[in-house]
Image (cartoon, rainbow, N blue to C red; front, top):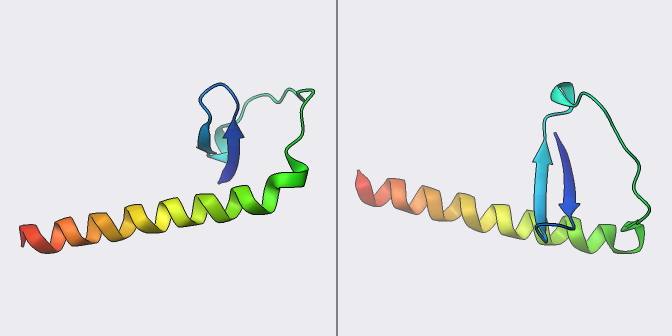
Length: 60
């Protein structure tokens, strides 16, 4: 899985690497912010997983 930042959507995107057919290098780089972007993504996903677990617990 590849995690990236989508400038158009202003959101994190995930990609299955084996499904990528072509790459195109853009003119922008988020390298200076990559650590914070990864931390934000992990925080977002962790909260989402916890919410899903809680919803599943409440349904059962």
